[in-house]
Amino acid sequence: MYFYRIIIFLLTPNNQPAAYKLCIDTFRCLMVKVRQKEPFSDQDIQSFQTSVDEWYQLWMRLEGREGCMNYTHLLGAGHVADMLFHHRNLYVFSNQGWEALN
Image (cartoon, rainbow, N blue to C red):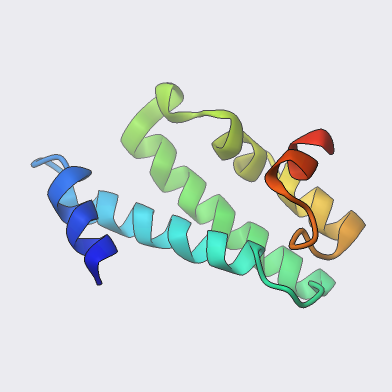
């Protein structure tokens, strides 16, 4: 609950508050999903990447090229989905381990 209040207060410009809120809410859901402990099926990975693609399009409309950072690129380019197809789960990797796979 407090997370959303902070997002609304700090991260939403006056001209597009709903779009930024949707974008951040979607990103948060994606991060919860990618950290799941259970192995991903092929269908789960395809569904995850479809959601990532929708989020990435919105993010790029809001932030443009300046908003494309390392992790947004990993998601938007499908590298995370590729790692999921290979490993079936990224939960066992630390952040350093995840970056070492790139």
